[in-house]
Length: 417
Ligand SMILES: *Cc1c(COP(=O)(O)O)cnc(C)c1O
Image 1 (spheres, rainbow, N blue to C red):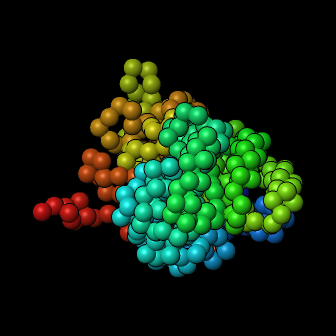
Image 2: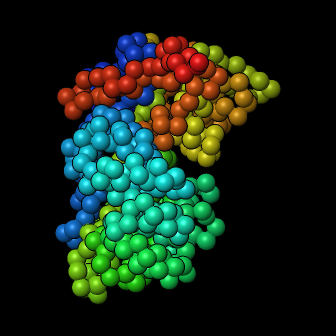
């Protein structure tokens, strides 16, 4: 028998033909689990965001770079963003064609730019000085420029990437300098991009950002595309009834802006969006095991193997993740309690859920951390020389498949001389 407190994963049949208890037995704890159907659905929702014909959804791979997930995104017709040569490498391995990849660079060496150029991958540069460097190594080449139109939005100061107080993009006041370098090196400016920040739940700020970058786009003649960035939010507080981002409303507003721009510009240029979180967050859950329960000076601590080496978001951004409970026995929880769910890392900030009211938790229970697919595994580390967990995919048929093995002790010493 299995006792479960799993409203959300039950609704999506997240674990298919298996259960968290079986998965942990087979693959160990902690464990990242992804659901293929959920990911495909998210890809399709964004592909169908608008009716404007020239539209591309670039998966921002930094949210989750697992090769199998990249292959799923590619099968769904998405293109890909890269933030580093490493991401380019993995994207090519996943079968993306060079023309499907945009390298959005930030403070990189000429060697890194050359890495992309050698593979026919378009580079977006992030400053006037980087445009100069690019011109020096790729005279006459195609290039994209990231602008900062002064608009920013996001769930935490650290991930608001547009606006007047961030390091990103070119300030439009420098457009004359930009044009000078373009003509000096006979560059072909084919696109401009921006990314105002991560996790908006109301579309209006995004639309505002779009309009402001289009004001910049108008100042350049031969653009093939404008890339509007990612940031599409997901409801992390599902148990509290948080609503989804209204894609229909956002799509309608974007459609109008896109068609109007095409009229004014005289050409139906391509519009791109770069979602990371929206594609990857909800298709991923993180499982861990409860090993100890104690009271310390009036607070109940549920001790697990879910340290911030495994999921960093709660510690890094004060993020909320909903929690479910799975129990192998049929003993039910008869009361609810307020607890801190903590990990096994040697820091007191190692708290994955703070003062959370949950059904009573017992030793041996399995904790399911919802919406952990984006900025989860990719930010995991070997801090405390802990092993990063395995990753498993629940396929469309409902079966579990290992898609990345757990680290081994050998991995910890691999690079020592
Ligand atoms: C991180 C990032 C994204 C993706 O952001 P999400 O909030 O995950 O959608 C898109 N574009 C750029 C340039 C980024 O840095």
